[in-house]
Amino acid sequence: MPYELSIQLNRCWTLAACAICGDEIDVLPGPRLYLRGSDAAVCLDCAGVHAPELVQLLYAGEQVGVYQC
Ligand SMILES: [Zn+2]
Image 1 (cartoon, protein in one colour):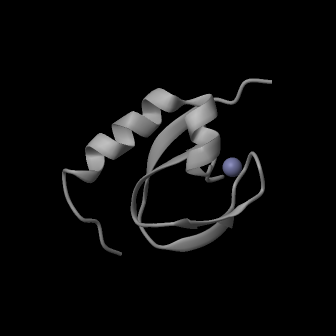
Image 2 (tube, rainbow, N blue to C red):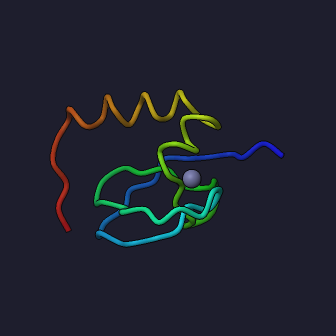
C-alpha cells in the first residue's frame, strides 16, 4: 500500500515512533514529514522510500532558518 506523506510544521520537540517502520525518532521543531492528514511522524528513511521529493524539499528548507519551540 502506498503511503501519502505531507510536510507539516512541528512546533515542539517530541519523541515518536515512525508511523511506517516503528523506529523511535526525534521529531525536531520545524517542517517535518507526517502521514498525510494525521499527526503521525515518519522517519527520513521511510520518507526517502515513499516520498523522496519531499525529503529533498526538507533539505532545501533547512537552509532557510532555525526553528525553536
Ligand atoms: Zn520509518
